[in-house]
Every structure is written in C-alpha cells, then in structure tokens.
Length: 369
Ligand code: IPM
Ligand code: MG
Image (tube, rainbow, N blue to C red; front, top):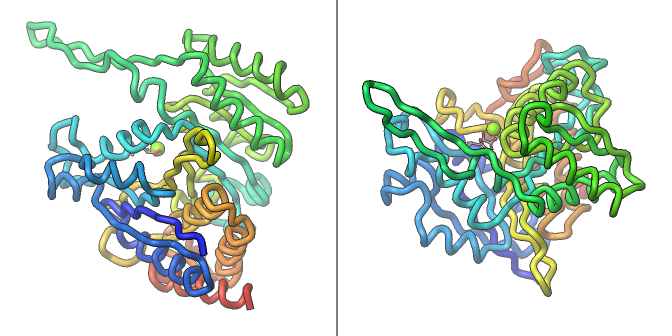
C-alpha cells in the first residue's frame, strides 16, 4: 500500500466543520485499502491566535513535505484589526507563494438538480461545465512595490503593482491548453490589453504558445470585463478560461454563482511537476470563504470541500476513478433532493453539514457495492 501524507489545514469559520466531512470521506477510502495518513495544523486567524502569525514556519515545513495540502478557509471579523502582514489571508497567500502553486483550477459545474438554485435561468446554466485556470502566484497579489506611503498633510498614496514575466504567462497558458485537450479543446484567454501593459504581454505570450505548441486547440481572446459579462449572458460558450490572478479571483466568484452556490465550487492549486518524480506540489481548497455568519451552526455546505478532496484524488494521487465516484455520490445526493440551506429550494429537504456528509458516504457505499 502506498502511504500518502495529507496535511489538513481547516482554518477558521466553517473551515473545521466542512473539513470534518472530508475526514470521514478519507476514512471511507482508507477502510477500502487507500493509505492516506492525516496530519492537521493551524492556518489563518486560529494560527494568529496561537503563534501571532497566519502560518508558522513549522506548518510551512509540513506543507512542503506533504503529498497534498487540504485547506479549509481563513478569516473572520475577529481578526479585522490584526496587522496587515499577519492577517489570516496572509497564511493562504504564503502557502500559495512558497509552494509555488501557480496554477489554480476552478471548475464550475452546474449539477442538473441545482439548476433552479442558480441566479440565472435554467436553460442558461443546465449542463454547464467550465474550467477557470487562474494564475495564482503573480500579478497584483504579489507585485512590488505594495505600500501605503504618507505624503503629509493628511494625504496618503497606496500602490499595488501588477507585474507578469513571460515565463509566468507561458506556464499557466500550457496548463490551460493541456486541460482543454482533455475537454472540449477550447481556451478563452482574458486580459485587459486595452488598458494594461501586462494585458498586452499576456495576450502576446498566450498567442505565441498557442501557435508554437497547441495549434490544434481553439483559442479566443476576450477583454476581462467583457468576459465577465459573457459569463452571465451565455456561460456555456466557454470551455477553459485562462486569466491572471486578480481577474481569476473575480471571474471565479461569478462562475460560482452560475452553479447555484459558492458552496459548490472546489479548486486545485498546482505547482510544476518535480524533476524525477513528476509529482506536483498541490493544495486543494473550496472557493468559498470562512462564512463567519454561519460558522459553528452545523449548516455549512460541505460539498465544495469534499469536491476539493476529489480533485486531490484526481490530480495528486492518480485516483481518477475514485474522484469520479465522489463526484457521482455528490450528484446522486443532490438528485435525492437533499440540500444544505444555501442551495435549498421549495420541495427539497434541508439538512445540515454532517447529514450532507453522511448522505454522500451512503451514496459512496451504494455506488461502490
Ligand atoms: C480566493 C480568495 C482569496 C484570494 C483570499 C481569501 C485571499 O478570495 O481564493 O479566491 O483573493 O485569492
Ligand atoms: Mg476569491
């Protein structure tokens, strides 16, 4: 049996609640011969409370050594006033940066059973299956300088820097083209080349890689604002969307609502394949945040978290069949009319976090019998 080491970082708010359901799914696979070993550690506000920083060096060492990191959510009003450098989100950003997780895969799939929960009409979203590929370690999130300076006389100046190098655009474009080849063979690249130099370079580099290495894939370019509009006008026109860190952050929240609820969207953040083993560093997290307003009530939707673990099975452990099984179990649970509050509609049965986990495990039992 291959032993795989998972580092669980549940974080704050609903993070620990939804992570509990992942632990049960892991136990289900372990009982059937998988060799997942779990470690757990602090990140975000809870790490700040314990150590005065959003992620400790010791936790970073464990993350670097793990086969995959499974991350819940960070942040909440309790930490609104902590210094910027140690705010909860800094923990997540350090993990992404230090593990060099430059490729963030955010699939937006609309389950048929959930088409009613979307803010868009059923025919626009039913059967939706798009993949947003977001650059995750560059751009305005990390560019320097990033400061607020005092100009005197009560005036201040804030600077963020949007910066992209050729190699950063090339490697994220490759991820998008490779994924497209396994899907519907179409990539839409989004930038703001009408306003930003980074957009000009982005466009140029994506086009060059396309011509040189992926001429068989269809490539379209769209301005990112128009892309946002098209996402809510006719989302099914897209297959793979590739875009920078900030636009990807915004466009993936938009895409989340198409699927019915942000509580449904998983994500995978991947590094480059290691020389020799070909194994990529990886972190898996739901797109949703810590939802402090509903934390501790046992009502959060664990599906994005569980689907993130399914992505770990697929992308880190070569367990595609098992990942499919988890996704099918989620779909079957929804087909049965079971819903957490965020996706409940008239005529469906509202259940809590743990009951949703139990229902999904029941389906795993049934589908694998
Ligand atoms: C996301 C989140 C993060 C981001 C926050 C929590 C720093 O919104 O993963 O989409 O902006 O990347
Ligand atoms: Mg976001």
